[in-house]
Length: 445
Image (tube, rainbow, N blue to C red; front, side, top):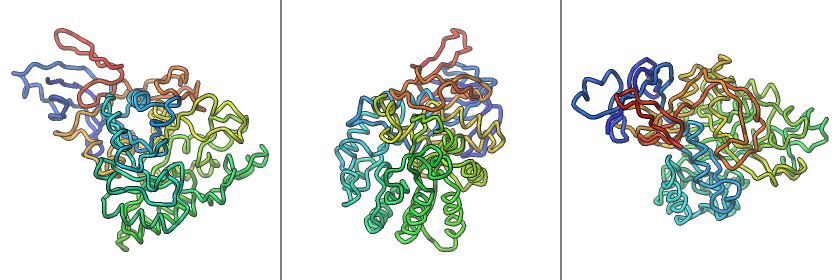
């Protein structure tokens, strides 16, 4: 089957394209970009008018907690995939802090099998250590053979430097990136928010930025020693941005490991003052930092130090969040709010151009994970986001596709809406109206 997305503003940062043109799809694959109607005049096809909209590669989120197996009351692979599609994501990477953890071939294969039952691309990230306990390396080779595309310690950061070095050495041989949660647990201990003036006023134990920065620097040094690709997850503070910036500046001349990093929308949108009314939905790890840190994150995005925008989507049940701050779970959902937050807080605010923002959510994560996605190049899977950057709406947590409702953004009015999400040539969320003779509506869930 042929389909033509006609008259949209096509943005494909991987190929430097930003122009009003058409996108031709054939059997779930991008066939061509440009005025292609004459090329398919002898074929049966439908034309979909997307004028006034942006046509971009489907978004890629390399940091998602799907909770399955083990905590399906919080999220399942199916509900997480549905939330991702609603947010414009066509590819997501499932983090390994599940029960059991994907520390072996069988669990990786389970995650991938369940992912194939959804309408989008669900990838598996293997655990670095057995049971994510940080004491003994997991079956890294078996997980790579089973299809894991990365390794991570997210949620249970490895404290032992020797263990981390060995993981990095093996990951380098396997060609897998190491995604690291940088936190010195001895410094954060039982802290619940950023250590600073606000935590002092609220009477809550703090988590100093130094706990993150020190481990960012350690993991960069170990990656340089091991010669592997290290990806720093959820960068939250100025010191971490500077550490990555310095590492990138010296990497070309030293031949050291490849360093990339990500941040999340809440780190360029909120400060630790969001916890002033003891809203547990704003309790995340690493914690929300200061206004100066927010500005540093924005600067890191603007100058390219921060490669990727991910969500760290972390759904929790009401029982996990509607409790005292000291015992509430860390994390917030993000798949259905990330795109409008990026449009409103970065693009509309002049921090990034729309093309730059899309690049950090498509081509950059694809490159970091070694994926043949994140582009509209002919021959690529037809994973497409149709975006209305001027569309304005309110966040309604009660209507999320995710099982999680834990967001501090409920009720916020934001710009930017995913009109439709297409994965493998099939609409998996939203709708696109045909303008061919039948004028049918191609719609998703």
